[in-house]
Image (tube, rainbow, N blue to C red; front, side, top):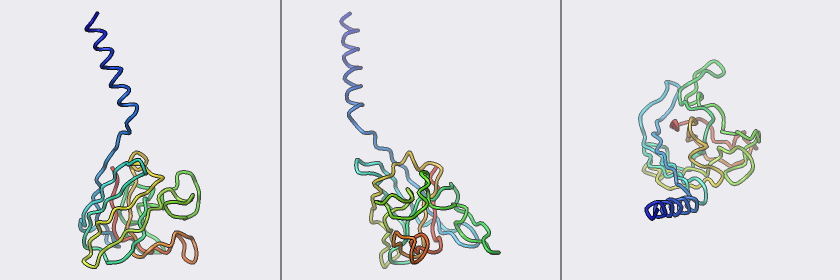
Length: 177
């Protein structure tokens, strides 16, 4: 009886500990350049990690044009080309911005628009990106079977004057598996 009591005490203590702690999930995503000829060279990875403040994305990328880049979660788990207006477009297989709630508009990571809107990705003069960004409305579990995309230009988190923040062409992509 004493052993049973001790066992029940240990189990109940473990349950209390588990119920009070958040389980942080992490995932590492390999990122490749994309272009009209398809998926190109590996340029590094992005670590996705759940925190109490949302999803922390920590890039470890190289060979990307310096400056600020639009950065988004896209709806499909693919980075390949697809035809558009008679030509193949790199990364188009990823589909549009992840928008499971059907907001239908672009407003940045802190707004109520596409859930896939992320803070901009900063790339240093040497082509490396290592500055983490935080997406408060996301978690790792929401992103399985999606893709992460780096766009050519910065993002103003508005649909004006250019649609989807003006990020332009898709230059690098990784599938979240």
